[in-house]
Structures are given as C-alpha cells and as structure tokens.
Length: 146
Image (tube, rainbow, N blue to C red; front, top):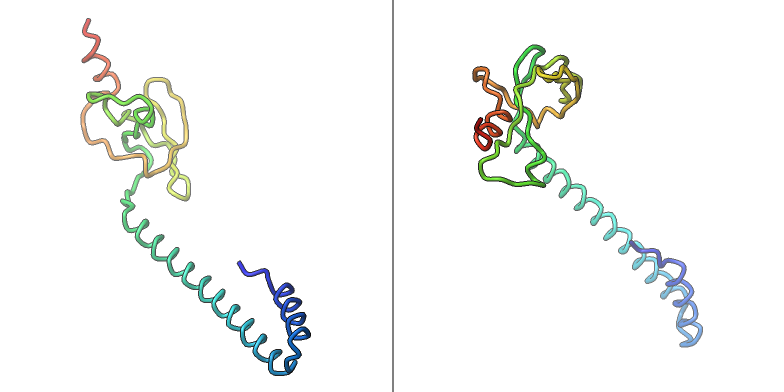
C-alpha cells in the first residue's frame, strides 16, 4: 500500500527550495506522479480481484455436487484418519440416515446405533447403496476376531 503522500510532498517542497527550481513545473510533475501511483494501485486491486474470481471458479469447478433427501442412507468421511492413519482402516463411517437438509449444503444426520443427531457438511457425505454392513464395525472385526 502507498501511504507516502504527505512524505513525498514535504520532501519535494524541501528539495525545490534547496535547488531553487520552478515551483509550478515541479508541482505539475509531482501531481502526475501521484496520479500514476493511484492508477497503479487501482490496477493492482483489479488484478487481485480477477485472480480471486479465477481461483474461486477453479475451486467451485472441483466440488462434486450431490443431492441428498431426508431418509437416504449416507456414509460420513472419517476425519480421524488424518491424525491416526492406517492402511486398512476405512475412510468412511456409517451408514447414517439423513433427517433434515439445512440450507448451504448442511445435513442433519442420525446415527442408527445411538440415535444421536448432528450436523455435517454435505461435501463430507456420500450416498450409501450397500446392504447392512457397518464400515466401522467391519474394520474392528478384521483386527479383533472373536
């Protein structure tokens, strides 16, 4: 950011007095330079705005649109795997049932086992088309056979 207008004017006036230059010519030149600085600053703002719009378009293009309705079975992405990674652990938990679709792609889901209701971002859900297999229990049973 350019916050040097007062400093430029003061230093320029001191230099003009010291060198005995024509004040009108120097004043016009200084105004032109200040206008150029404003134009450069406005161009930088415009370029930053264009860059942000392009980045947003690219990011939005990568988002997968999924349509959910109440009563559907879904799987939820397991965020704990980023902390405790494992090769054979499933990345998805569930199945859960969607109880309510809230605006801005937020879903209220119900855990079938505990009947707890919580809200989840719709991007962290995917449709569950399988049978009654619980992904979390399956991974536990693989490592702890009875």
